[in-house]
Image (cartoon, rainbow, N blue to C red; front, side, top):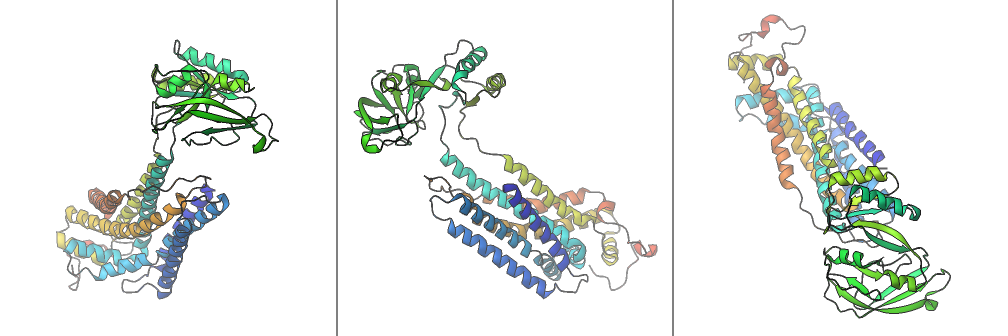
Length: 495
């Protein structure tokens, strides 16, 4: 569904460029059709309203139904697309204002602004492309920053930092998997955690402590031997008693006993479950994010359960598995098991590629204006002002590209900030049954400012460094050659 949403979003973005081109007047002194401006304003307001409603609907930190969340997110993204579509007619409108408000600017900027505004039918699509690409880049940056902060807060490690965790194997393949690990890491001890073969009912009641998933029908706690307990605590001197549970937690609590509620038969209700109480003690974990209830294997076997291997662990206190070793183990295991090294939360970076592509497109849209043919009147005035030097032509091309990029990035930045800041609400909403409250994130204003300021400067520099024949073309076909000289101008030509 994400691909479908992005496809529709891209289609609306392209439609915005077409809407902008259709709204651009042919003549310099003509105005943008009022009807197009009204349609653009209406579409923009509808888009903002839809996104605002989606943000308001997902403002609570609670569980959201999968289908409802998907529809809300889809509606919000379509609202953003409508906002971009509605911005189309305002591109030639802004260029027209720029052409009329440049009297006090220096001659190169004044001539460039008038040239861009005087040929809006040709320059509008390029500026609109810059606007759309800038908006998408900023939207992606804001959303990625917010979702990364939320994912970081929700991240729960599967093992101690640096530990190798191998799971996902069938019981009959456990010996083969263990042998494969030993061949790659000879002499390294392997810690094993077990699970009950029989599921049934299994719940735990601990004094003064509430750990996750302890009252579910799934197996609770982590079952093993002395090596597993010492892996959890990171302390070889941790006392071990095969008849005593250990609550591994950072909390300062006193635990005297653990009550186990169990039965091998699903059909019994909670009032008829069997119970057993065993002594317990609380100890500190090796890592503050790893909290577990350790149950000795003997206790579970005494309840009538059969145990089978669940996970194989390489204790990082004994050996820290490198990335190369992990790759070798994965190749040896194939599809028999999954090997994972706990390295903490890894922020996604794929969105940076998308942002880079969008910035490149925005820059390309700005530079595309430098390939537009300059009007004969502007060209004669330009050559007269600079004596026909290539430096003058380069300066004119740089000013034209920079002004067009500034218009596109300014409009795109406003739209991108509105879309991004409203979309983060549905995109950080939780579909989990026990949602975690949203965390605050720092809006990447420095990055947004760098893009808005840096892109016009980069476009101007690139256009100024390009050969003059690429940025300021010769007279259009059909124009008399005599008009191309430095003195071929009319008395009324102005700078």
